[in-house]
Length: 242
Length: 180
Image 1 (tube, rainbow over the protein chains, first blue to last red):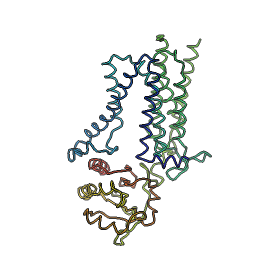
Image 2 (cartoon, rainbow over the protein chains, first blue to last red):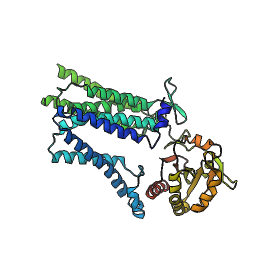
Image 3 (tube, chains in turn blue, brown):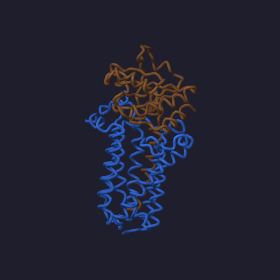
C-alpha cells in the first residue's frame, strides 16, 4: 500500500498533497473562524497573502542569494522549477506578510492564531504525507519488525510516525474545549508539534548534528516546547478568557 | 492546586525532553547518509558501468574526484529534450573546472534508432550512455523523467532534481555550489 502511495505521489507529484492539505486546512479553519471572533474573509485574506508571500519571497530571496546565476539568465526567475526556492526565506516572508496584514487590519493576534490552528495542523499532516511520498525525512536503519525498506536499508518508518503524530495533534486541537483562554489552542498545537518532533527526531537517519552528536532539530524543538509551555502558562495566569 | 499540578507536569516534560536529547544523541552515526549507496541526497551515488553508442565503457566510480551530473533521459520525453541544450551550455562553461556530465538514455524504454539523430541535432558533446537493460534505472529507483543527480567529488549525491526542464540558473547554482 505504501509502495502504491509512493509511486502515485512520487516527486514532483508529492507537492499535490501539500496543496490539498492547504485547501482542506483552510476550509476547516474557515468553519471554526467565527468561534474565535475572526471573519471568514479575514482568515482567507491573511492565508492567501501569506501563501503569496511564501511563493514570491522564496523565489525572490533565492534569486538574490544567487544573483550572478540569475543575472546570466534573468528569465530563470519565472522558471517553473520548484528547486529554485529557499524554503526558510519563504517562511520568514510569509510570517512577515501575515503579521503586517494582521496589524493593518487590526486583527487580534492570539485569536487569529487560534483561528488558523486547524490550517497549520492540516498542513503538518500534508507535510508528513509529502515526506512519505518522497522518501525524505527518513529513519535510521533498524531491525524492528515494522521497519520500512527505503534507500537500500530497513529503516524506522519515521514518515509514518510523523503522520500519526500529526494526526493525533490535529485530533487534540480540533476537539479541544472551546472555552480555553485565547492563544491556548495555537500554543497547544506548537507544544504538541515540538514535543513530537523532539521525540521522533531520535529515530531519523538524516539529522543535522551540532556539538558533535546532538540533533539540531531536537534542540530547536525543545526550545519551541519551552516557549509554548511558558507562554500558555503566562496566558492562563493572566486569565485571558473569552 | 491545578496550577501547581500543571507546572509540575510542564517541568517534568521539559526535563525529560532535555534528557532525551542526550539519550538519543547520534553516538553511533545513525545518520547513515554517505555510507549506503542510494539514489537520495546525502547518500553515496549507486555505481554503474554503461556503454556509449560507440561501445566505450564508462564507470561512475572511476570519476571519483570530479563533480558529476548524471541526467536520466529519453528521446520521447519533451522536458528531457528541452533541457539538453542548457545542460550542454553549462557543461561547456564548467568542464574545465572538473564538471562531468553523463546523460544516461533509458534505452530499454526508448527507440535506439532515435538516440544519435537527436544527439547530433542538439550538438551534444558530453558522454551519452545507454541503459539497455534498465539496471541503472532500477538502481536509481527511477520514477519520473528527466531525473538529475548532482554528485560531489566524494561520490555523495548533493542534490536530486526530479522533473524538468531544469532552468539555467538551477544548473548554474547547483554546479557552482558543488565545485566550490
